[in-house]
Amino acid sequence: PLPLLIWHGLGDTHDAEGLHSVGSLAESIHPQTYTYYIRIDDDSGEDRKATFFGNLTAQVEKVCGDIQADPKLLDPTTGTIRVDALGFSQGGQFLRGLVQTCEGLSVRSLVTFGSQHNGIAELKACGTWDLLCKGALALARGNIWSAYVQSHVIPAQYFRSVNDTTGLGSEEYLSSSGWLARMNNELEVKNSTYKQRISELENFVMFIFEEDTTVIPKESGWFAEVNGTDGKVTELRERRMFKEDWLGLRELDEKGGLVFETTEGEHMQLDEEVLRRTFGRYFGPERRVGRASVE
Image (cartoon, rainbow, N blue to C red; front, side):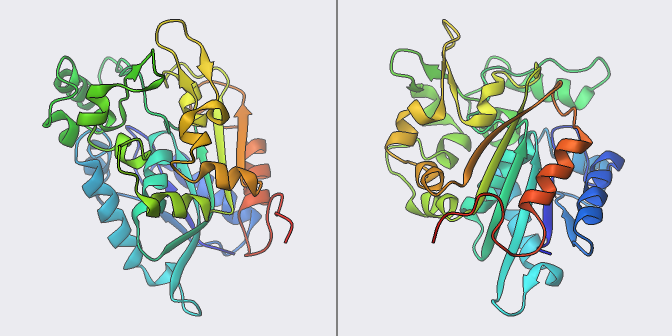
C-alpha cells in the first residue's frame, strides 16, 4: 500500500493517542501501510506549541524537507515520494499547501476532515486553561493584519476577510495575508504550479462536520464562501476561483476527483465507520481508487 501522511490539528500533537489510533485503523484496513505522523518538533509540547505559533510557510517547508529525508517514503522505482494524505482540521489545509509546494511529492488521495480551506472568519475562543491558545489570540486580536502576527500566529495565517460586495477576499486580506491568499491563488499573479499540483491529485475528499461550531464558517472545509452580512453560502462551483480555475479544482472536478462529504457531529467528532469506508476507498495499494475517470 502507499504510505500515509497524517497532519494533526490545532492544539494536538504528533504522538497523541487518538491520532495514532486513526493510523492503526488505516493499517488494519491496508496491512503494512507505513504511516508518517507529521510534526514540527519531535518534542510533544513543542509540537503542540507550533500549532499556535510559528511561520506557516517555514513550517510547511520543514515538513517537505523531513519527508524528503525519510527513505521509507521514497518509491525506489520512480524516485518520487508517492503517498496518500490525511489532514485533520488545520492540518488539512497545511497538507494541501504541502501538495502545492513540495518538490518531488506526489499525492494520490488527499482527505481532509473539518479543515479551513477557505480560511476562517473569526478566531474561536479558547478553553479556560489553554494558555498557549489565549496567548495566540491575544497577539492576534486587533492587529490581525500586522506583518508580525501574519508571520508568527498560525491561525491568523489562514484568517480571511471578505469584501461582501464583490465576494472576493478583502483588500487587507489580499495585501497582508501571510499564507492563505497565496495558497489559494487569490493574488493578482497566479502560481501555475499550485494549480497543476492540485489538478494532478487523483482524489481530493473534503469532509465537513454537520454540527461544527469550531470552524467559522464550517463551509470553509468545502471551499465555500459565506457572506458575513447575510450568511448566504456561495458553493465552490459558483465561485470565481472555480469558474476561472485559479487552483485546479475545476479540472480535478471535471475528472471526478473532487468529493464533498459530510459527517455527523461536532468538530473532529470522528466516526470509525466513516473512517473505515474512506480509508478502504481512497487509501491502500496503487490502483484505480474511488470513481476512476474513464480512460
